[in-house]
Amino acid sequence: MNIAAFFDIDGTIYRDSLMDKNFRKLIKHEVIPEEVWHREVKESYDLWKKRRGNYEDYLDMLTKVYVENLIGANMDYLYFLGEKTITDYYDSVYRFSRNRIKFHKNEGHMIFFISGSPNFLVDVLANKYEVTDFRGTFYHVDENNKFNGKIDRMWDSESKNRVVLEFKEKYNVDLSKSYAYGDTIGDYHMLKLVGNPIAINPNSELLDAIQEDRELANKTKVAVERKDLIYILNPDVETYNFIEFAENNNI
Picture 1: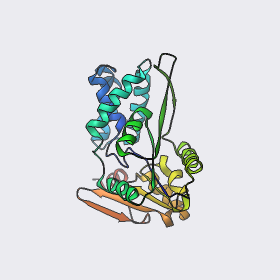
Picture 2: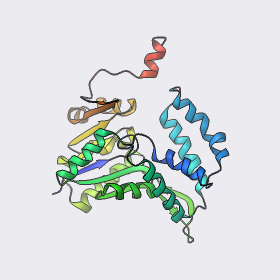
Picture 3: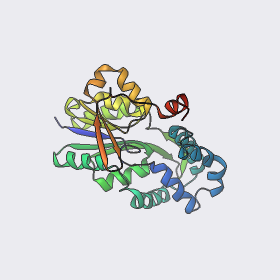
Picture 4: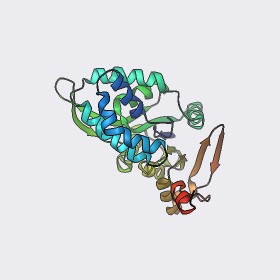
């Protein structure tokens, strides 16, 4: 049986959101009007940038507006702009994740990308890194190859669980010896399925879930990358929710 490594992308490999960068590219090429950003997204984005709002709340709003405004867009053109987005930003990744991909390739392991980002972005990034297979949120098209507004999401834990099991059967993967990397609660089941789960810069929701699941906590490593340092921790290290800590201590 084969050993594999399953990677989330946004916040796990890539230091930001591919959809965020692609959204800006779509505005630049007049696929989405710039006024949409100012009217519907900017407030949520500013709250996150000022650390007064939640990143997941911003991404939820971005995804909603993104999907609504791409209806009728030609999929070939979306792939074209996806190529431009990935070319500009694909190497803006965590050093830890880049090194882990290199490690798995050197070991002859299979590598899979499973991401909530659109399939036309994940496809391009997967080709850049020459991974075994990938799955992103699928954007359906009509008979004219234009996006019809329907998606098969891939950012939730249940969907990722299903895809990991599909890849297990398709590629004869031994999950007990395999690895998974993620940063949010959407990666929970993916981490739980493998013998070597690594949470990379996890948010509080994922870390809480790992700590409450003793079986998962006992086998999970937590990697935190800040500036030029990488910390490898166990899930039981004492942590603070920054917002709650700041409010409770009048900071």
